[in-house]
Length: 395
Image (cartoon, rainbow, N blue to C red):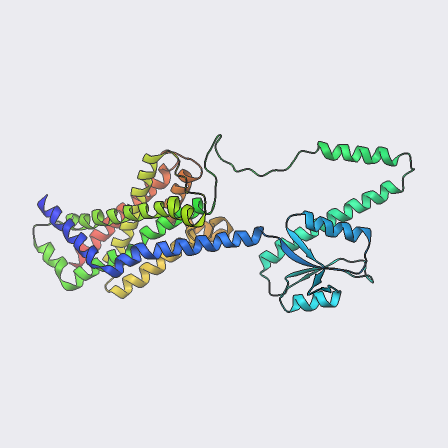
């Protein structure tokens, strides 16, 4: 017991003295979650704001007036018919969009029956397609209504009120369209930026312990303290066990820090909805310990295999970033190519994130997180067995 306490005390002293390592462990994930979350929230605001559309109308017909009214009432677009108190003409619209002052224009030339959607050529493909598809939908809807009115207008006069009444009654009977989340009945949790981001950055923070953890192991190997410890009646399991316990405390502190940011900092200072944890506290504790052990195992195996600090820092940091990207820390996994989605299933970061998403959003329980929890524990066991074999061979 005294030996274990001495080893544990040594690990905490090394941690406290490693100021750059502590900064990496706590400050970097905090900065990243702020930058990424605020950037995503700003992107959502821009996406949900009304897009300004230059409206160059040379036809001046009832149809073009209705089309402009449909744009305004859609909630997504704002038609602009003059700039700097000068009416928007076809040539002026092309010039303004060509200079990048506006991103889209709707041109209705007198000499042509085509309706032209004018696009800034520098726009990102995905954004451009989403806007043009919405514009096309509104235009086609206006054209369909115009065509129906034309057909009804050609009917005998006594039939027109009857047909219009039938059409109106039919439209009223159509079911409304609304959005809903696939949540459990009476669920109080609502998905949002905070609800989705915090799980990813919890795992990202935990796995970044690879740099100080591997660094401490390499320092002990290169300076000879590891061999001196092994010359004493202290087992390799006890030495590595001290590192596991010390860094488990670090991971738990990181978890508490991220929880505090999600439940208090973002709601208080930025007005975001607070992070909802649900009621499965035991399952959250199990998921956190399992993810922490996997992160510690990753750090120890890197430290055992690497021979220099540069190797460990470069490989560890690059791998953590790659695992974070492919596992959904920075971008949703479902928007990635199919082969990357398949690769992400092999990532312990993905297993940990999925556990938190099951608990924080889907309101899962201990049974729903059991498969990924078992994988995280098996990864930890594999890492520890492999690290022990490497260190025993090299001593």
